[in-house]
Length: 288
Image 1 (cartoon, rainbow, N blue to C red):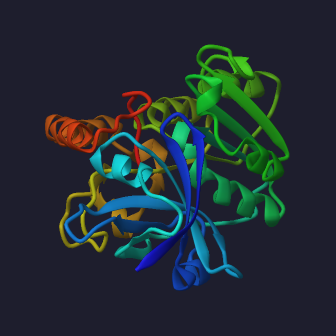
Image 2: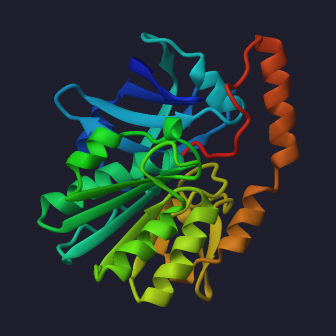
């Protein structure tokens, strides 16, 4: 059993958890994830590891409660335990000294971006980070991302924090000012990553994205997490979760993510009615 050591609410339906998992903490690298099962009959969901503390033997996970399982996690309290934390899984991020790196995070995608940005800066890259969300209360890990970056830019759709607009607007502004980047790393909602990649391809900036398809076993056996990258079918759990963003078929990814939307809604409504709890909002998002 994996004990919950710390829980913190970061924003509307957004929660940070520290679980005791010393072996995972010891071997995890930036970009990797775990499969979580919160009870013996629960579904298996992938969540990227946002941080680790090897001295404490803990891993940090950040989720947005948007479905039945993540809503169940939102009801957990310090001291509770879960039966399954499988990992670290997936290929880690290739951390190389390339020069100027652009890190772009949207919403809950800021969580997996943080360890990558920090690692990129630690080996000597100049890191410019752009964080985006609909509103200020959905921007997370601002202080940590500022420490992990040489420059931090915040954008919100409604202008409640930072620049009003989208992360793509901030990218254009930087390039128009003469900024040059050797690499871009984008993590967030698929629609955000899609338009970041359309822009960076035009600008000639190589771009890596982290994908969050439907996933079950996390070992490449079930095939649920297949994505099309270029002319090849890849499994995000073992070939990824990071891929060349300019080759990803984002339309296919988003269509597959919507496959079980009606079933997910039914499960969420059934659990909410039974447990007497609800989400702060019914906004779209992802648990990774």
